[in-house]
Amino acid sequence: MAVEDMIQTVLEELKNIAQTEVHVGKPMEVGNAFVIPVSKISMGFGAGGFGGEGSNGEGRGTGGGVSVEPVAFLVVRDDDVQLLNLQTPGSPMGQLVELIPDLVDQLKERLDKD
Image: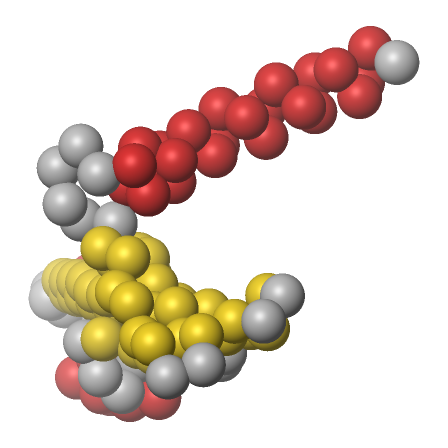
């Protein structure tokens, strides 16, 4: 397979994974409200190759990745819609989301001790 074919294959797969730059998730029912996550999707891609003569001179490689980052939540309650932006510096929601990985680690440590 030629490097160009590998690049085309990876690009097609990335396109299938992430169709847009912003993704609106499935609504989740929480009490009497619906919470809808809004995420930013980023893609990265890299490819390389090597020429040369004969079978010892060939080389190729390709790779890509997708990142999904939550940026906001839409909260729908009755006729009221509220946007909770996680990207606002110092916002309570943004601070809470930043704490979640540490809280999960601490909880896991406690559960392992018990």
